[in-house]
Length: 379
Image 1 (cartoon, rainbow, N blue to C red):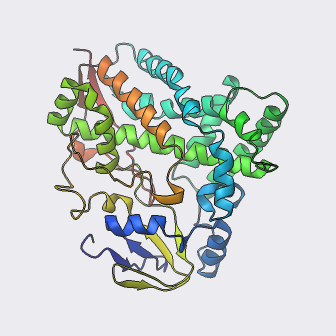
Image 2 (image 1 turned 135 degrees about the vertical axis):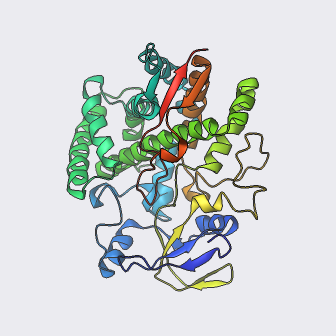
């Protein structure tokens, strides 16, 4: 597949998208505005292809955010969100993220066998996103149940029910933030202004759900996939323990080696586009394979080898171009703190089952484990 970076697929449903896999080709497509993302047009096209309802896990009511819009609307939404999602706002979360990590690890007590996803990788980002959005403590358990449904491979009616419940809750929370703003990011988004412009209530709800999905699921996978990568490469784990200053580079390598995202979100061509010598007609759906791009031998030496000392950057785990992940600094911060705390607390971590027995979640977009059973030892 990597030898032919652009090809058309035929899926069992009859869907015939074009798949782009090479690093240079995916990177170019991510920045090419002829590959559009407008959610309303995507829904119309899917309907024409008799594929209505497959465009988004969240449903149409939660789609109007900057990830699913094109310029100039994208610039408007991102400009408003940028006013709240500043480096200072992210860095301000560091002490609380450290506390949350300590609380989760303290709660393990002397347990030696745990599912590291269930006890650490999953609850950490959901707690952080609740802090970020200013969800009151008493609502967080219910909020977490909705968010779990939104990012799980559950029947569509279950996901729809959860998305509707979350949308209703967020509308109420937004009204509360309008009357009594706090120091959280949702309050900042509610009151963000660009001249006379502001986010509407529906845009705020969609944006909050985007922050939830992007800030929760991807960070779970970054931590889980990164831990697995280290446990299956003990030489790299030993190298990181010997020199913890290598952690930032290690996190970039985790993102490249086993990206939390398999595919970029769906795009379509607004005119004929030639890429890698292949002409994709107008009005065609296009899928951009992040995982394959990050393992392109034309871009990376020994791409299937985990090397936390790898000097080459440029992975596409956070995308590229105008849709580059706004939450990338937060994901990196959470991962940095999570790995520092985990490796600092436990002198030995081993897989509790053979790696080949681990199950990966069934998802076109996400790349993450179902469970990560490990044995923990402080010495």
